[in-house]
Image 1 (tube, rainbow, N blue to C red):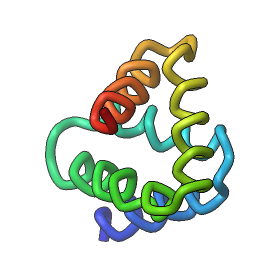
Image 2 (spheres, rainbow, N blue to C red):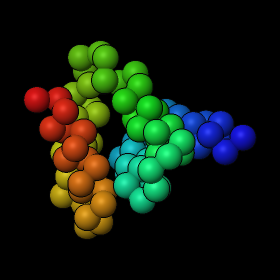
Image 3 (cartoon, rainbow, N blue to C red):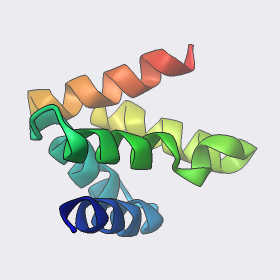
Image 4 (cartoon, rainbow, N blue to C red):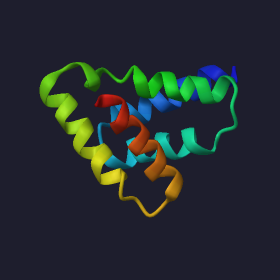
Length: 87
């Protein structure tokens, strides 16, 4: 049940397509201990459909660049990790 809630919540936040939703998922991913919930958050982030289309991917990358300067070091780290994977 917890995995479904984690997955559904992350998917709903990412579907908002806004900075706050992405930031929330990145922050959760950064602080959740290794295990099923951590893997589920990573899967939702990696499976975000915006990664796969041109303009949407540009939007997501722009949001990650903003979050790479976030006040929260955990959010910064997660955003930078995702940006690094793109290169």
